Image (tube, rainbow, N blue to C red; front, side, top):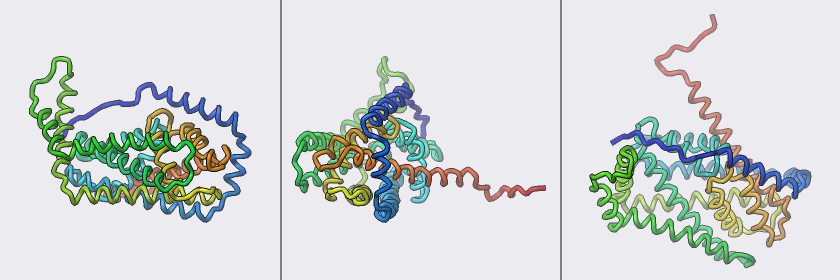
Length: 335
């Protein structure tokens, strides 16, 4: 059943922009822009070009993972449509707080054609849980191959904590125990007096959508996990190529756990697209590897440039979609 699932999760967004401005001001005040620019201009362009290609491959793998979930929820989207939605959401997320904001745009675009807002929410919620689970486990696997041991215990505990939480949520959704919990919520027809009617209706429909994953099947779960592993491997490869272009002394494993930590930190909606948060975290985490602050900031800006590349592609796709003339409408000609 389709519904009108409405919410506004971003309150007082100007505070995020103020925080980003303060962090960037502190950063620029302590790290000379000229040094950052020198690092960027001295980079090797060939690995950067290859990195741009791997970014698109990673996006395509992410779209394939999303399609598995949308098909299961009865939302009919082509792989190309999901890829376009993913790129377009990157465009908007660059101006909104945290990577979760991009998920809001995807939720709106996935729900709009079918009015299936609860189903779209269930798709993105399940995808986010699987994504964070594989990301944290991938980071822990990379840490196990790490040779540098400075300040890693804190990182290990952080990644392990995220892994345990996501694993418990995944098992709750997919297990018989979780089904009993959701069934009890589904059968609870009496609305509590303190709960608004709209929230009660929406929550029941979200529960209905989540229950669909109980019958996901071992094959689809395997496909989801495999696509997630491939996605994070290719995405890590793109960052590794950026590090190679800057001549960092980093292994693929080092980049793997660095990416996992920064991705989880910037997922929190503190600043637009994680600006400031990513830079300071990379300065701190790359210091034991002999990477200077200007180099770490340049590395972060390259990651931001990769997002900008996808965002521009999303802008082009959105413009083409809005300017496309319907088949039954004659093209306009100049008199």
